[in-house]
Image 1: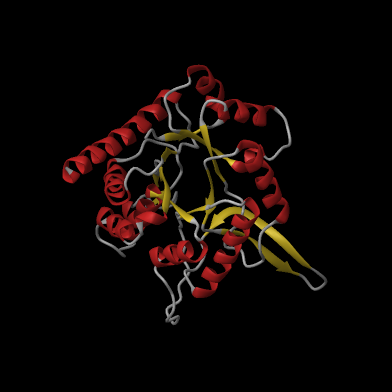
Image 2: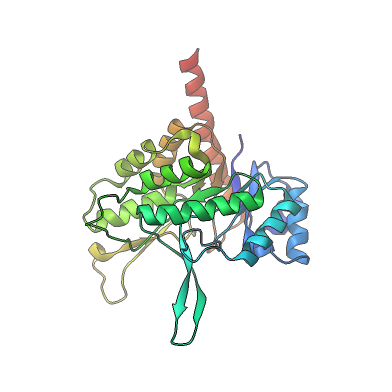
Length: 305
């Protein structure tokens, strides 16, 4: 099984000309909602040579005000046109209601904001994911989030861990999980900086162990950066940002290897969205993922014989 890459505009022509050996291309769904034009034409050309995975950032699956029907209609039309191998979005919210003295308006934050891991939020997320699956008539994938704030519910006896929350979502709706390994590590590294955990890699492995392999439909890999507040240069105060702007770090590769040991040869994507390098850099990262998957497959074959 070959890994895929996020197909971004700087690499459109290069991929179509070189046609590298890739398992699939993944694009952001919202970039192709227009009913025609150059972008959609390029995507259709890519679809002639590769499987396409559609990855969204705007459905706002965790919003209590429900989904944007226009957004879902555009996604459904794109799915029908491209026939992707997978369709996904995030366990997050962006839409909410704004009340004034005279009206109630729906606003969109244009961000991936975290949702609480509560029973109430789970009910909302399940309803919205089921709505998407009913509309698209296919299994949908939901990605775990990199989050820089979190909801605290110390008095809620029914609050869940992130893995229990996502597992319940998959069980209730039949959706799949898109496990972003870098997101898990980013959250763990920030928790280490704040003193909440001691070893990010061990935390990530335990996170993966809590997920049922049958629920996992795709894995994402990406780079991240370390940021210090401009007013303070003390490394203790740094945070890690999931910017998709560099190579996968050694620790995330370790976590990915554990993910493959746990889940098997799951379709894997290299994401790179900022400071986009030459195409060959992404292909090299995908090749490294392929090597890890192949090595684990060989090891599993030895054990089975």
